[in-house]
Image 1 (spheres, rainbow, N blue to C red):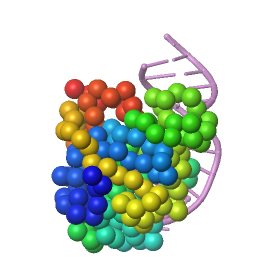
Image 2 (spheres, rainbow, N blue to C red):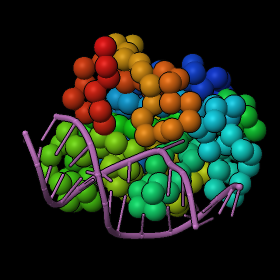
Image 3 (cartoon, rainbow, N blue to C red):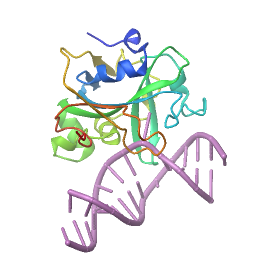
Image 4 (cartoon, chains in turn yellow, brown, cyan):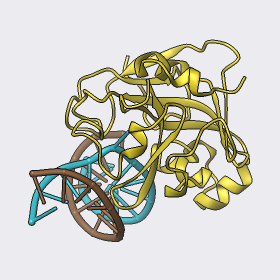
Length: 187
DNA sequence: CAGTGGATGCTCT
DNA sequence: GAGCATCCACTGT
């Protein structure tokens, strides 16, 4: 079943854990989502916290669309916009277990190690070929393909990675025990 | 393993 | 001009 606008038109805190186990492909490359983080508009760590700008405009658009931004001048990062339009909340996709299009992803990453192919927000965007061109695109239409998980996985939860503000909030979710996480979860 | 620092572009102060 | 929702290469144990 394709995840569409209705799926994303809910609290980011409901949507984020339900994305673990879903399948994300871009032009046929990608795999199973194993790690995400929730960013709410009232959250000081969110790009939308200080209001709408040119960069974060897609966060203020309709749910079920992509928000892509450049990180540290080098990497791209992919978010999935949630909640009713205008509330500017989104889920950062941090890691995939690669399952489809492995050869193309290895070429893009110039890397053979499957474990590190999509283990991190910058890495997975490089592997899937995600750039600014994908900012604002709908997730239920090509080049995106986003399918709901078949069954509920065992979840891990913890604080988000790489932020300084609101660093204690446990809004990172992962597939428990996966070897494709960007970093392990503490227990 | 852990820790450090460089690359690099854009937004906001 | 500072500060980043990162990654990689390098150092030292």
